Length: 356
Ligand code: GAL
Image (cartoon, rainbow, N blue to C red; front, side, top):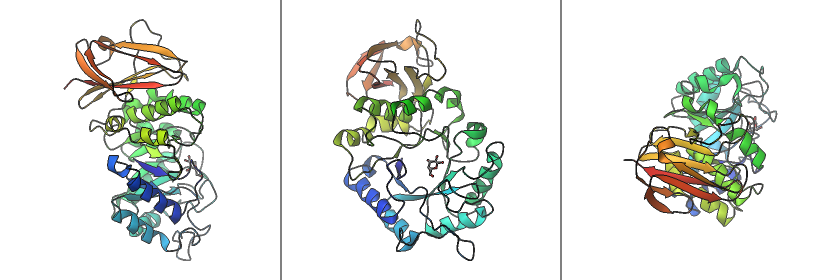
């Protein structure tokens, strides 16, 4: 859980990092578990130093990176940076190909805790496992515990080798601030849900909550699907301008507890009896998954306003019985053999079903 500046277009600078860290504390985001302050592409100078080291852009980092990382650590937070497995980043800054060992050591020496590793300026397919494993080994030998976020956009079926290589892996091309983008990423979740587990997760890309392109209902579905599918939750909005409604969503501790559940099992599609099976590239309304206190059931009004109902007997693993439940967005609670939600277009309900 954290922040990344790319989706909002904020500069990749010390000022952006410190403003986000301050907002994490003042808005209560740190208190509910958001921790990483990650800075994306364009943070460095266009050239490496004479000894080959990456150099922070002095205009964006007037006191260097270490000073910012130290300040962020002093606030009880962590700091992340971005790099690329090819010869250059997507925006034309130095890539790490051939410099993996040196760059991993530089990150460790600066006190970096998270490394997002991109896939530009490298052969398009068939080589990413080798490139990403080289950096995985370099980080492991760097002397610092650094979260490794692979960003190869789902190439080379990354989910099949992700868990042994990294802490998370992007499964798609870039998210955009539109419902169609949320649908396109979420509608493919079924194929790789089973490959994630504690220590390694499918990354659906940074959140667009608070960036203005989604309705409040769509923001609930976007955040909810990312959360129950166990994607990293990296806030992509400018926290100095975020609306009260979007902030309240990001602070929903019931949804966060599902995302951070110790079992680390992604929720996936299921089909209640009498309902249509999932259709490729369409967002299926019915999601479920095990959590340590029972099960989560997600209902998404993907094709328009509707009432969606599920008998517990139809939920894989949960089975017939009378259970108590809580809906995470309305705080409604109940006990029974089924749940039901009347939802506006693209809205979502998330039920935590107690089977402890
Ligand atoms: C893309 C990546 C984005 C962002 C961007 C920066 O390849 O998927 O998340 O990091 O590069 O140039």
